[in-house]
Image (cartoon, rainbow, N blue to C red; front, side, top):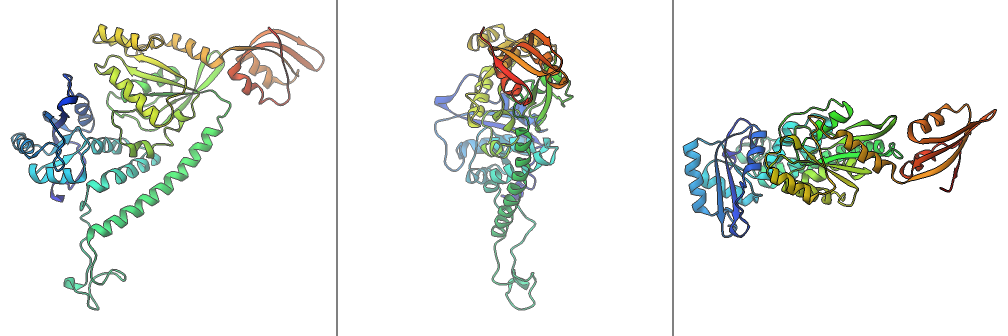
Length: 439
């Protein structure tokens, strides 16, 4: 098997895409559209696409030996380097398919992990991807680590003076067993390093307690980073490809004069995102878990917009965010391809806002909606503070509607309207007296 898998990367390789769909689940849609985008995002050159309807999943090859032979012929004709399945295959199925087709076989999960590996820039992202790769691909990559041979004595003998370090001489140990131990050790090291980083990230998030936190979520390439830049001038890297950015960015966003909230951009979601990635990127997704409001960005120009939105919701459910206050944004509304689909999405999500992050369309309306959620119902308060306390006076000017203001020699008394959601922020000022007034 290892002769086909010297390198698991699919970049710059000629790829044939295969989608095996159970007949009872088959649709008329292009089932390989997303896999095509994923493969091209990984840098592969797609030379052929094969959609197969199957009556059952074959236990050894998923698709059956006859269809595997057909793929083998197509692979020879197109001089393909890799076969990419839009299915999650077992280690045994991958081995059997590679023996039959005589070309490297990669499943959907492995492809996504490869893309993540090529995108990782920071130490945190690299560690997270490496952990996810080892946990996901290790059972599928049996005997791939060819850097170790079976360790025995000289010429395989156990005699004194035999080749091998102390502790390795003897009857010998299979390479696979050594590799398993090395990989398990590396997984333990990665988990320890990631746990240390996670603790720091959680501490950073906890320091923002009392601040209103908003998180951008949604399918990959829906336009989250473009929206982040449009709202905050964050300068987040933007490219028209899947998983262009993996690292969370957090910036202040002024939603009304001096009123500021924290806006975070997160890694994009995709259908059937390997659960190992969700687990290893838990700290990255912590921004969404701790957010007060989620802005779910949907690419409404994509023909599969509804399914993408629903798949993103499934990931949010996986990370226990499905009950959070969420505002759906139908992005790229200026370039919709189907008016019928656009109207369907507006019907399905009647409270959604149609925007264009790139063109700035309806971003003022978005600010108004966010401000209304941010403030919530208002409270009528009487604030008494030191006349020389500029910090509290500045806060009230920026975050409240001042109805009345009276100065004495040393104090200032202000009647203000404040959003209920900001009351906890006001209570952080220990030197002021707060009195709730009747309307």
